[in-house]
Figure 1 (cartoon, rainbow, N blue to C red):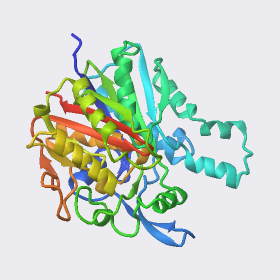
Figure 2 (tube, one colour):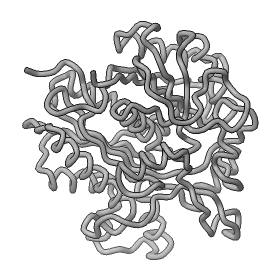
Figure 3 (spheres, rainbow, N blue to C red):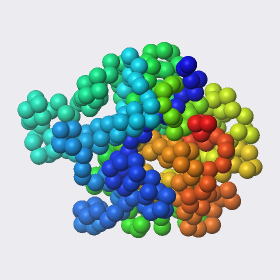
Length: 386
């Protein structure tokens, strides 16, 4: 009999902690940040910076770049995991890839090292369709395959698109993956110039979401994959629903009125069919910037019940840009499965209901918010599989 809940049936992860779900989980629950000191940063490339880069690894057959190897490695782990947990794919399996900046290292080499002149076989890996096409071929999937992009909200956008496909009967299953390996010197430098990326001290010292003294976020990288289906296998968590909106206000700043942010939360609750009393956690966007922390804390205090709690994992995994919300959803899904919320440790005075390090899971719904640069508001709701 087909289950009614949309479950996350399999997980795969490549993060600054290393290759695989287990290093990701062990790093978070140890309260250890994923960043390391990386040389060659700064205006002149003359200093080291704290960045949570994905380390070298993966399979050479997956392409020449860390990006392609991480993406395919994460998907392969998620599909293998889902099958081991009892999932069997239907006739139409769709693939959704959340990505903002893809193959930045190959594109840089294409222009600067090769002056825009490559053989066709070396040029094709740069195309955004190539990674999805190679994955569809590897697994023999024949549903639709496409990319989704909504800045930092891309992960939530991808999950909501997957749910729409499943609700409409377009597919029986969806493999969703979010990939961002763009924390290069050039990109990190420009986020530093914007005043939000902080690389001059260890992440837990500078990224303090909802706490005093927070200065911003450390840059991070990741590729995280999930198998989504309404039947077959043991899910890590259920995806209940969600919503998206847009501020239509500014290219970087949140509308201080919070009208569309608040509406996004309210519509996500309605779409998911939950009451405010069901809400237990806010897994916040939580980048440690003043405007984001103020916005999310304001909505939390207004819309959530008095016993709800909040947390952010960005001090641990870094801000993984286009993969950010997917990384954070994977943390929630693993937390439900293993009975622990992998919250970052508190380091300063802050919000009275901010979790302090790994905490036993309480029954209820987790709200995952993600506020993408440019006004992309997104909220999804998750519950334990039982």
